[in-house]
Image (cartoon, rainbow, N blue to C red; front, top):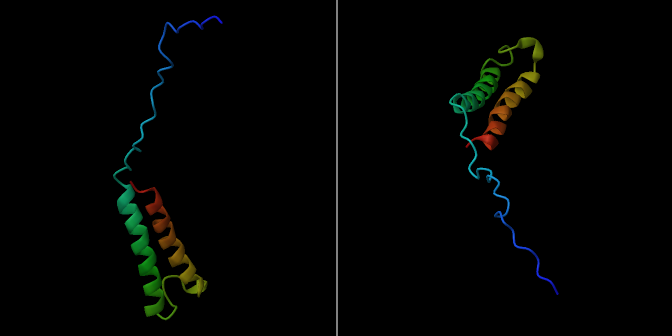
Length: 81
């Protein structure tokens, strides 16, 4: 049985993708924590003002707005490096 020819070049030498992800931009962490704090302050303001602040026509939807803002901040933590 004949032998196969040897390669003259080494096997493919692709540049391996960097295993370490790039760091986040400088603004990422302040925005992340800022959204969490703003959401919390929105809900606290709603309860302390007995529904007159921050947006009176929204009524109970102010709670959802506060939680929504805070959740966006918490979702950003999944991408924080």
